[in-house]
Length: 257
Image (cartoon, rainbow, N blue to C red; front, top):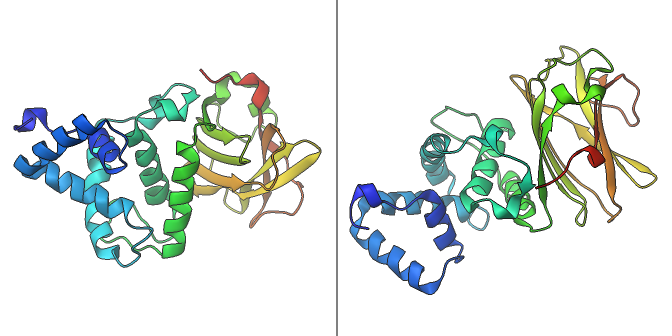
């Protein structure tokens, strides 16, 4: 592995940093890194990102590393093309790409395509908690296609081609939803409600950016999540559902593969 045609993939680099490879492969990677400046740079970028939680003073290095990593990964991974499957079966790089995508697209102070990235240690903690959730073997990924879900047209307020991805862990009571094709609302918000047992949990307002919506929710008990619905509420959200239902996701209709 001494030339660029045989450079390490980001997946291999991440797995080696997380010590998820056999000893023999780890040693081979180390030998390659000693001889390949390109892979050394890639490893340093990933190390900066992975160490961000415990070393909040590396903001400047993150600002330099994130755009390069994001650009490189976008060339090889299309999140919207993934099929439903338990996420732990996917490469580690996909998990970290998702974390980057979430952070870069929606987090306060992080703006894609800008040269300077600003973020807080509190947000770092959120991103890494979401990474832990995604890596958990109990977390399952579902592909959502609202064009084939009759409930998606109940209110007539959504475009027909709304689709996205859902990650859910019934044990830890955590959910991540990413939707594309949402119709922008000028003076209202999309709000998510998660039904578990006899409780309907207020998961908060969907974070919007150019027709894309994202939300992360964590509950407090281990009751099986039955369905998720999204209503249209006054700006800032409501304590209880008051507006029309825009989206309904009955989990029994989705099957992980």
